[in-house]
Length: 612
Ligand code: UDP
Image (cartoon, rainbow, N blue to C red; front, side, top):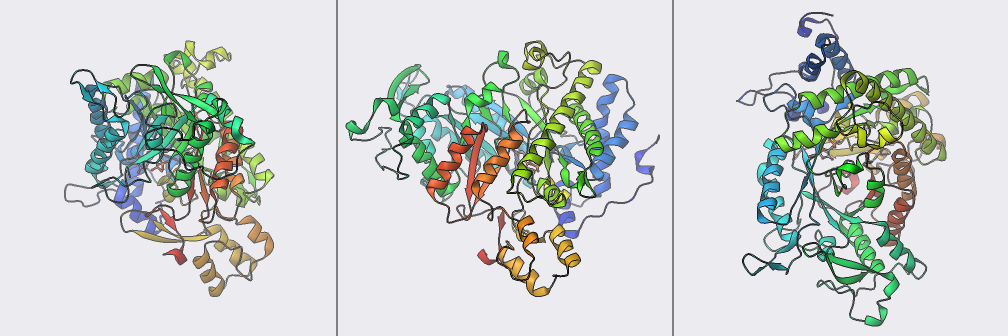
């Protein structure tokens, strides 16, 4: 097709009203009076056109590519991350979701990071920071002979600034704060969400996810105490950072060092088990902190010559070097099944076009600052992932909590990984490799060219999965029916369409049964539903927590970056369960782990009808 894509014959895209509302509120362009001035097709054409413009740099035909990209998105087989859908082809034109900014130990560096954060939030991106280089609270300030206020105090400034920017009302600012387990303020950090701060209301640091950066040394020290573990907190950690008043308990072998980052000197020791238990306790109470396994992240760092990775983006799926950014996109796996089997041909073609799309994004995006542009283009990281894995499994007749599901995860992700590498290698040959290629793991592994230092990431797909009408990322069904709290005050009642279809086909669709399902979310205790259907439509709370971790680890095996996975736990989950999950994630070589216990946050995105 040559000519103006607007004139191209094509079927109009139908969205149910609730999804259309999301598009109108967040994605479709509006004029100065707030009137919506494009329809969903117009949005996909706008994005396709803007992203295909990169072709002009490589002397290929943008019109053909534009049409290919339009089809890729409008068929819902692939969607790029929200900033691309929102901003492509607009004066803003900032298309990436993930950024990491360094925070240096000086007022100038801290407030530079704050300024860059504001610019990134304004454009719809999320930012991760490592605060580990900041001198601790109570340390000296040389130039003023004053006392340092520490990482936590500065995080509060970043938090308030995030509230103020609010990303033009379309996307809330999201941040990740990482602190090394060796930092002197680590105990305060671990408890930061659990200790209301004066004047801040009951939800401190609400624009931050927190992650403790642990290393293998810490985990080894923890193993030393494992056999004596009784699943109870000893309760003798004090806020000042002393691991306990009873010195006899402080066994040297279970203790690890605490380092002042300003002087690089060891200033004390903490007991690994007690610190770990405090992490578990707080994660159980509030969902924060999560853990990042930094040695595993750096073991897989594709460009070690460029330095160590210290932080990830807000939801943890994208480890990045300072000032790097990454654009994500996800394949809708529900669209990759035909007659009960995976349509490998279609998946292969989708991967190829998606990699091409994401690589183009790097050429056309308007980076928030020149430093971010320089650092990002050295490695050209992209993050292709998936959504609708739960639906794929149901269509393949495989229950999520089964070995067969884990094997399917490995098979599908390995396929995507292999073909994304092939696509990136081809682009590398025609367009040139990423500038750091010669020093990268890919070159060492024998690749002759590679366009992108990473190609795969499993994003949470929080909003794009709503547009595609599938379960987010690699999560199991959250509930067979549930109310989704989309944006301030907007609520959607959703019944899983595959379940509805099955109920009709198998003849158990009655108002009584559908009402009972809508109340409970889970179908396990609803009478009148066949056992095999109950087995297939398991929800996040029906399955044992271990399956969440096994699934995360299965995907991680064939993902360059990391895997966003919320280990959704029922309210009655114990601290011992959380502890077990964290240790299992480490053993299975996950790059990080987060848990979320139902009802442990005052405002959550999903909830079941009966809890309302
Ligand atoms: N993100 C953000 N604000 C939000 C949601 C997400 O800044 O309200 C960023 C964050 O870095 C997150 C990434 O976008 O890790 C991807 O999130 P998700 O896949 O949920 O975004 P979607 O593209 O579905 O909107």
